[in-house]
Length: 244
Image (cartoon, rainbow, N blue to C red):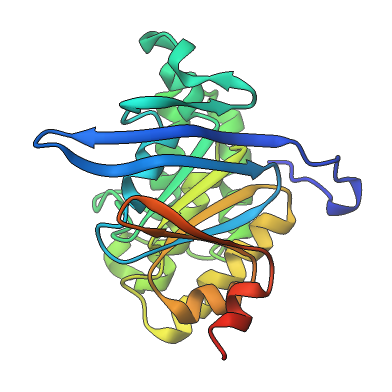
């Protein structure tokens, strides 16, 4: 499993672009309203807002689990509307996902949980045996590959989730409240892990309602409220505003 060297970083380009995206569910509930947002390759962006602000819907549209009611979303310059349904899986392979509740398979070891996605994609056994230990090493669990989820702490289980997200070498990782079930010490470990992965060249989009987490990351922050973007703070500005 190869990683990028930050010293060899290419000029940033627009990876994801929301162009006037609105999402309305049944009952005329507007989850997102006229979202205009660009995320660059290699960026770390935190999406913040109260429950119901639209964070999860935004992520689902990036992952092509939901489609906009109006407007358009482009990924690497290509409209997701142009993707045939049979090709959506190719788009999703470029996106690693991490969730609050880990979503690990309880009857599989850490190694097997990470390997599962590669096995499903038909990757050769030799490649799996080489890449899975490397991914677990990146998240600091190289010595716990044979442990089952119940034998790991919550923080360690979330690290397995990040290894699983990394294993297919995604362009971007979408992390939905990854510290939501963790104590402060484990949360800080996950913060450092996300920053490390970002430094390796992977774009990170984080959803969080935890001010402590967002402040510690100290990167760009996009603020959602009632489905609208009400703020887009560059590095340091969000933290500064919250200390006034």
